[in-house]
Image 1 (tube, rainbow, N blue to C red):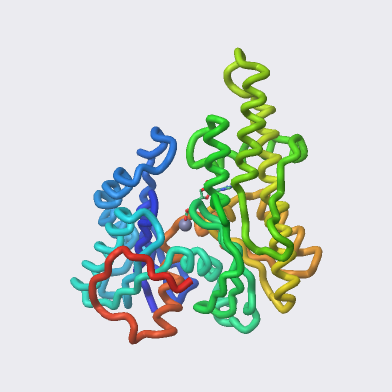
Image 2: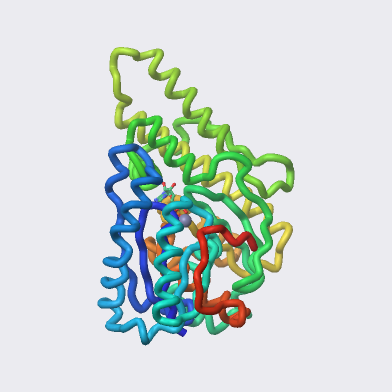
Length: 348
Ligand code: KG4
Ligand code: ZN
């Protein structure tokens, strides 16, 4: 089954054609550089750019795939959560395509999309689901930090989530405090490679014994205090030194890594039958965290899975096509030709 998917929840206009949840036939993306000057995504600009770009992204995707719309079986789009006006452009585009070409429309949950990014380019996994489930999945993005027990493609149980900032948001705020620009994750990660992971003793907040929730605001506040202290001791020097920035970034990543290790340990105690631990969402693009968790889980004989390509970690349309496939397979009668609005469907 070939699904044409749109993802416009934030600042990238992405379109992909995905077959049977694993085969990425083609993908195109138009990124919005316009936000960099503002130090973060400006919702109004994002929506306007999606409106300008979606048809170009669609044409590029179809061209790469050497397909016509008539070759497509269904249309999918991110329904939520995300920026409301940005979502509205994607849901309107998908609804128009559904009506014009008489294809069923599959509205998809963004987080289910991130989770299903694990299937992309993994044909044998999709054909041997009994070997894959039950699994655990840690979804870490700019808006969410969640741990789910994952029992089948459509069956997820929320075990814990952030009580304050999302982890990606903490990366972005650390970068902002250091004056490094947006988006912060990749920049912090680049600096961290040159830093000392133990230079600063930052708090690792594990919350109550057995809790699988997360909290990153204390970590962020601790960095704020270190920076204020540094500024008060050298007020005339202005910018922070490269070495200082690298050490802060490295210590921050180290604390985040330790929090994830601890939460995974706790989840495995509760679900010892877990076959795979998956790490998805924008922050799963982080090289240090990928390596740390791979080594940790190898030691205890558990499989660790991240999306096959880095571009499937951050927002992309292929993951939406993958999630839509399972929704359709599970309940085809729920999906018909039609219109939807940009209201998140909260089944997670
Ligand atoms: O999943 P995503 O692309 O969008 C949301 O659904 O939010 O995640 C974006 C987040 C941003 O906070 C960004 O700074 C972070 O993912 N991110 C990273 C890396 N690449 C992106 N964080 C740490 N290391 C990275 N390499
Ligand atoms: Zn996302």
